[in-house]
Image (cartoon, rainbow, N blue to C red):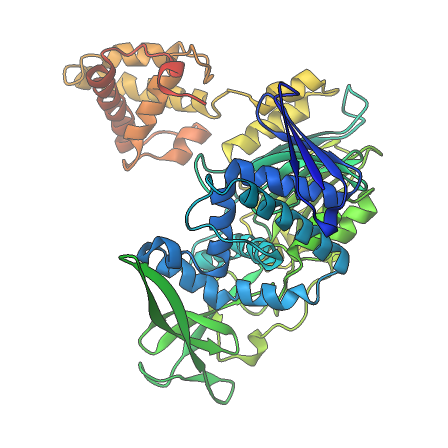
Length: 586
């Protein structure tokens, strides 16, 4: 097939020919002013071939490193620093299960994945002088392994929380949706704003795909062919990690510190020992490192202290159809199709917001969630000796936390418990098992509070209002902190003024600040520095935010922190009135 690449909307045209049986046709790649590829073809296979080519052109090292990471082969190229990562991914079996899954995958999905991988290989063949020396030719199983490993990231995080006995609180990132009735545009308005890093192999990759039934705008991870969130011409969705509990930690009691025999029921079982081989590049030569593993009826032992071990059981441990679910989501035509795609439950627990051209809105905390006996506290390690702790079935999607077309006309989850996703939310913890709710009720981030306030106030949201809210610069709770500072300064300012000569000037700047993080504002610069110096001090945050009486330690520490922040700014910047845009760039 041919791939025609238009740089910056036809300022440069490059025609590339690469025959491929899976994609016998022509695809055109237009790059806009941001470099985003807009791929057009007559069929999905052609489009995905060209997407693979474009992704490789943009971020080939990231694509290949993501594949190596998923299959546990990073150390074979990049050395000992990646041994632990490789070990984790090898015992999870991403590469092995992906290879087995190729033969069981829907043939249509396999053809599309193969076409995408062929596009990557075509770029590498056409540009041998620009590819890394360590590059290798990927094949379809790499795509499946990567999708599977990405699905495990949230599950790993959940497992770590349970192992460390940490309470689950609302997760980060932002999304909200406004119904057609509450929109001045006579259409649903959907915002997707997932958080991420600045410089990582898994930073988002944006693309526009147009060919056959594949008509998608969205974002994915380098090495995957389909968007993780985005929209087609009929519907859109946002997907954020976190939600119901999809992994469990079991406390295993061994007969002795060196034994592999562990308590189960009224008797004992033997864990299955194995050896994982990790290839490691050391001083230009490959070495084989051996790591011992133990597998129990509950899963692999991930930590052991003497006679006590901890095993992890993951709800998607044998699943390999993550790519199929992404394809079905992006090609869905209506809410029924999309709901059915989510029902494959191949991904980690997610918080989904959805909107479509028919005016439907949906919020669901989805995933493959085991049916558990509620006598156990599942957000903590449970007894591996109890047969009752072994789950065998999964909840139907209809039984998970969800709401369709709420009368409030808006939904938001910007780090929000379900009972706060809308005004008078019916999604209260008494209606669900604790492991399905899996978060402290009525808890939220400052971003969530701001979103709820704004969405409830706007009766007919315009597109401009939606855009303004998406980049809202108001610093949530800033007025409460400055109010508390005023009280604290009144009681402690005089005695600390001599120690910190610029203290009163700093208080004056913050008192006159409008609470916004705009580029020309000086108050936000001082406010941010002040909060840095508040960290680690005894400050009653609840008293500050609720307006309750401040304790003596809180009052002194609020003022002391500002004094230190002002001295630090004078030393580093030479003044207190530093515009935010001078030190913060986005």
